[in-house]
Image 1: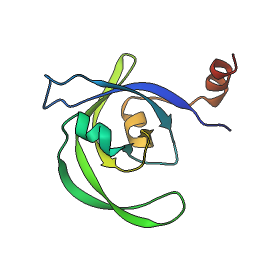
Image 2: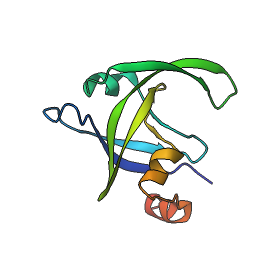
Image 3: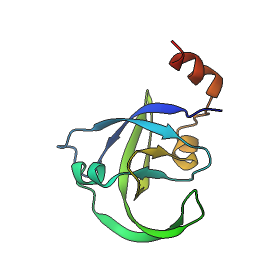
Image 4: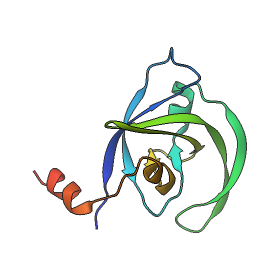
Length: 115
């Protein structure tokens, strides 16, 4: 199965004066949480609430800032979650997908990217 991406909007509900950020997020059912790069956390003016120890895909353990709340919008669905600030792309994990009642359908996603 290839990678599945979703166009989502991220916003800071504590700062409605700031514009939302539209991103193409990797939908990853193997990850639990939303993960955002540092430049998006800065753009949304999100402050670190704490740091969390995480295990990344290659098995390494590391600490990452935890920020929130973040409003995640996909179509007409939305949820409020916290996020780890890690990596260089937005990763949409299982918790926000479950909260919005979303299911990854790689067959449909593949047909949309093929042409």
